[in-house]
Image (cartoon, rainbow, N blue to C red; front, side):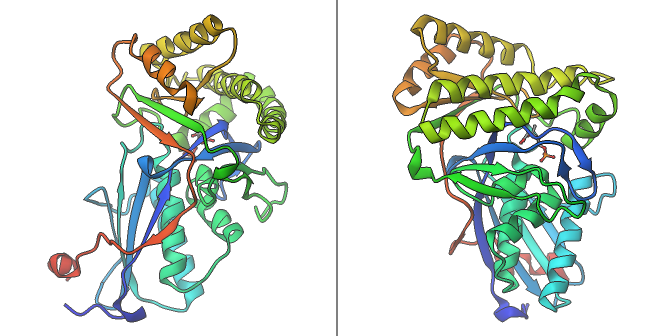
Length: 355
Ligand code: PMV
C-alpha cells in the first residue's frame, strides 16, 4: 500500500504525564476548557510517557485513532474523544491539506486512573501533529491547543515545574501554561506513584468538573484558596523550600477532594488504601520532625508521593507497611515532548485495516 502526502513520513513524539501540585478542578467555559483557577504541576519523565505516531495519507478514507491498541470509535458521549477530533480537523485545515490521519498512541501507564493519561496523550498528540503537518507551532500555541482537548494537557507541553495561568479573556487566548522551573533547577524531586487501583475511574473528570461546579457549596471558596496556593508554590520553588512546597501540595489536594465529596451526588476518588497512605505520610513527617514527603491525588485513588531523592527510601519503606498497593512507579522531573525515530506504525502490517 502506498502512503502519500508529506513524504509518506511517519512522525513520532514522546511526551509525559504531569502531576498537579495545585489542582485544576472546575471550568468557567466547557467548550474551551477554561479553568476557574490557575494550577501548577510537575512534568514527569519517561516512566509515565505517551508515544504517538502520526501519518497523513490520501489512501485513508477516514481518520483512524488507535490508543493502546484499541481503535477509537467516534463517540459523541466522550468529550475528550470529540475535542481530539476537532483539534485534528482544525490543525489539518491550518496546514491546508485534506489527507486523513492514522494515529497510533500508547501509554506506559494505566489509562483513566487518575494518572493524567489524557494530559500526556493530548500534549503528545498536538506536538506530533504540529510536526507532522509542518505547522511549527511554538509552545504557547501548543499549550492553548492541547488545553482544548484536556485542560491539564496544556501543562505537559513544558518540562520542569509548570504553571497554567487561568487568564481572563473569553476566547481563552491568555489561558496557557508556562515553565516556572527547569528540570535541572530541582533535579532531585521525585514522584513515588503508588498504584492502588489501575482500573478506569467511575466518574470521568469531564463529568466531575461540571458536577462540582454546579452543586458544591464548598467549591465557592476553592478558586481563592487555589490561587493563594499557586503563589505559595511559586515562592517555595523560588526558595527551594521543600517543607513549604510539600505542605501546600497536601493541603491543595485535600481541598480539591473535599469539594468532590461535597458534590451532589458525591464523588469519591480516594479509597481506603489512599487514606492509609495519607495517614502514613503524616506519621512519617511527624516522626522525623520535618516534612519529608507530600501526598497528592488527581481524579483517582493512586497516590503520588512527592519527595526528594535522599528521602525516597524512607518513603518506600513507609509504603511497605501498607497492604493493597499493587505497584510502585518512581518518576522524576522530566522534559516536554520530543520527536523520536522509533515509530509505532508499521504501514505494511496496518495496510488491510486502512482499506
Ligand atoms: O484535564 P482533565 O479534564 O482530565 O482534569 C484533570 C484534573 C485533575 O487531574 C484532577 C487536576 C489537575 O490539575 O491535573
